[in-house]
Image 1 (tube, rainbow, N blue to C red):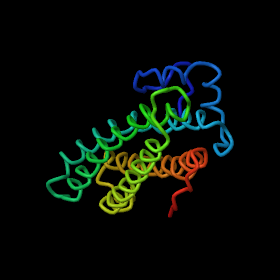
Image 2: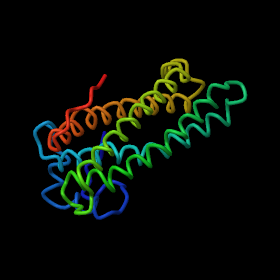
Image 3: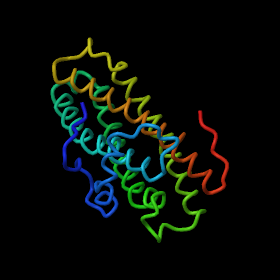
Length: 201
């Protein structure tokens, strides 16, 4: 269950994230649900505090679980080593990706960054993020296959079971995260900028 504390979740300390946690934004972040209708700024806030915070919290935890499982079982289960390699690549790519969103794209959406650049630069950013999302989807599919579909009944022990459950939770959140960006935020932003929405699968 997601914590509902009075202080911000662990995020990068930027002017963007500091502004988001001041009233009345906090109530919108925690309570708003119809992301097709709310201002773009609030949708960005939701993504930062729901999905980006989740990644910043879960990725290091999963990295530690994977290291422990690989150290214990990697010599007899080589797919675990491959899984670890894909996860570490995903970890680095995701952190770079969400940093770019918080530093460039989201401030543009919220009107917080007067130097965000012209519309064509923002549209180029959207195409770059969509390509990155496609890469994430391919990596997640490979990881699921290497992890046996995250079937915890076939786990090698307690830590491995927790790892499989955590990786499945990561996959589910990333699918929702990418859906909210590709099919809601980016589509609405393209409408605002006058470019047709990209086709999605």
